[in-house]
Image 1 (spheres, helix red, strand yellow):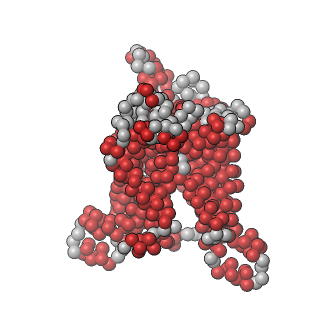
Image 2 (cartoon, chains in turn yellow, brown):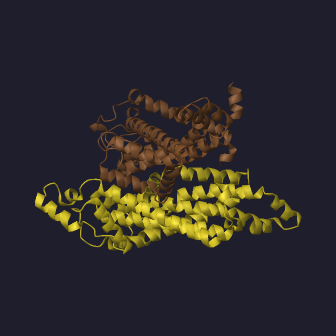
Image 3 (cartoon, helix red, strand yellow):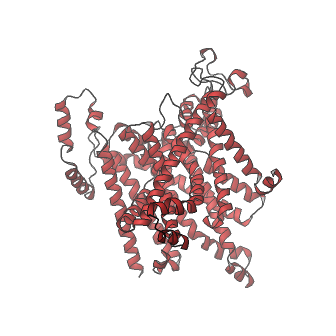
Length: 311
Length: 279
C-alpha cells in the first residue's frame, strides 16, 4: 500500500516539474526577440537571421519545444547567449556560494526558530512567551532588504565590524545569513509554538502524566515528537522562502550566488541561464517537498493508510 | 460605545488600526499634506538631516542628494505602494475566486488543470516568476500590477473552490436552483456573500505579503519606475547614501515595516475572532 502512495507522489512531482519546464519555455520564448537584446539595436538583418539560425530560434515553436525537452532530458540546458559557455557551467560556478549562504541561513533559522517556539509554548502567557511572539512577528514583518540595510548601517558604517558586501572576507557571510534567516525564524517560531500548544492540550499528555512521568520526560518523549510533524511540513514550505530570499539578500550584499545571477541574467535576457536556474530551483523545491511528504509517512503511521476519505 | 470597544479590542490592535488609518489618510491626501512637491529640488539644502538630529523644520525628515524633501517623497511613495498593493489584491482575489468557482461548477478536466497549476505555482518561489515575466515582457504599470496580483491567486482559488463545493450542497442553494436561478446568479448572489468573510480575511492576511512583493521588486529595479516612486525604490535609492544620509533609506523602511506589521496583526486578530478553526 505504501508503495503505491510513494509512486503516486513521485509521479505527481514529475508532472509538476514538466508543467514548470513548459511554462518557463512558453514565457521566455513568447516574450520578444533575444537577438535584439544581445546584438543591440544596431544589428543588421543578416546578423539577426544568423543569430536565429545559430540558436535554433528560426524553427517553429513546437519544434523548438520538442528539441528543448530532448536537450533537458539529456542534461543539456543550452548555452549562455553572452559568452557561449554552457548554461550549466555558468550556474554551477555560482552554486557553491548560494549553497553556503542558504545552508547557513537555513541552519540558523532552525536553531533560533524551533527552540524559541518550544520555550514560548512551555512558558505560555508569561513574559518570555510574549517576547518570543513579538520578536517572531517583527522578524516576519520587517522586509529583508530593510533588515539588510539596517545591518549594514550598524555593523559596516557605524561600528566597522563587518564588510558590507562581497564574498572575499571569511566574515562576509554573517550579515547575509542573518538577513536570510530572520523571516523564516519568525515563522518557524510561531508555528512551533502553536504546534506545541496544540499537542500539550491533547488528552494523552494527562494520561502520561498520570502514569507518573516527569514533566521534562513527558515534553521530550511525548510532546515534542508529536509537535514535530506539523512543524516539518512548515520547514519544507520555508525552503521556498529561503530560495526567494537569496534573490534579494544576494543583491543587497553583492554576494556572487544564484540569486544575483538570475537578476543579471534576466536583465540581459540570457534565456538559457534563466531557464537553467528556474529548473534548478523548481526541482530542488519539488524534491524537498517530496522528501517532507515521504518523511511524513515514516513519522506518522496514520499517513500510510490510503487517505481517500479526506477529500 | 468607546468603553465596549476598549474591552473587545486589545490595545495593540487599536494601535495597528490607528497606524493603518493614518497611512490611508496620508496616502489619500499626500499631495495636500506634503510640505513640498515630492520632485521639487532644493539645491541649497542638499543632504539636510532630519529635524530630530539638528535639521530644520522646513525638511522634517531631511533631504536627499539633490534636495528632495524626504517626508514629501515618503508620502508620495506610500501612496503608490498602497495603491499598487490594493489594485493587485483586488485583481488577484477576483481572478482566484472566479477560477475557484469555475472549478467547483465545471469539475472534470478544468478542475484538474487548475489544481495542477496551483501545484506548479507552489513549486517555484513567486518572486522568481515575477521578475522573469517583468524583465521579459517589459515593465509597465498595468503589467506590474497584474504580476503582483497573480501572487496568491491560488489561495483564493483553493478557498473559493473548497467552500463553494460545500455551500452548494446546502438546502437554500438547492431551493434557489429549484426556483430556476442560473449558475451565474447562484454564485454571485448566494455563494459569494456566504464565503466573502473568509475571502476578506484571506485578503487581509495576504496584503502584507503583496506589499512586500511590490517593494522587493521595486527595490530590485523591476517594479515602479521613475518618475513614480514606491517605498521600495526609495529604499533602493537610499542604499547608496548610507554613509552620508542614512535617513533616506531608514524613513521608508520604518514606515514599510510598521505598515506590514500593523496589517498582519489586524489580519490575525480578525481571523481569530471570526473563525478560530481557520488557524
